[in-house]
Image 1 (tube, helix red, strand yellow):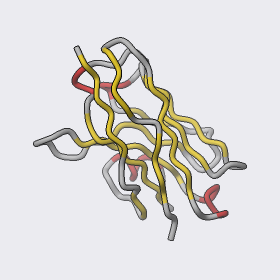
Image 2 (cartoon, rainbow, N blue to C red):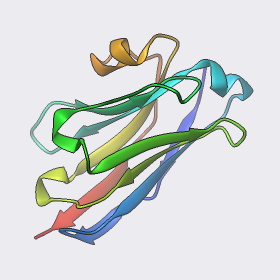
Image 3 (cartoon, helix red, strand yellow):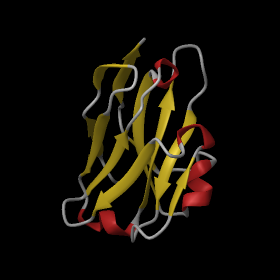
Length: 124
């Protein structure tokens, strides 16, 4: 079991940036693919980005390509989501997830552990 704690959310104006962090509790963090999902009010949770256990592979939802970047530091058991050029429609609760599977299976929501989430609000 991997416990995940997100941080870094907040209120930002459109066009601004935020960097989310997700700290994992387990030293076998490097065995897991990691990902970020988001859920806006009244909408279903959607995939944002994923990164392989080594960091060599990444996958992004089309709506964040070129604006968001996922990375990880296995020495710190932490995964990051750098979000640039934010838009009001990016407003949501962002949650990180861990998976023993691949980044492809993660993109369909097949994850083993979930964090509680952190609120990101983008004002127009």
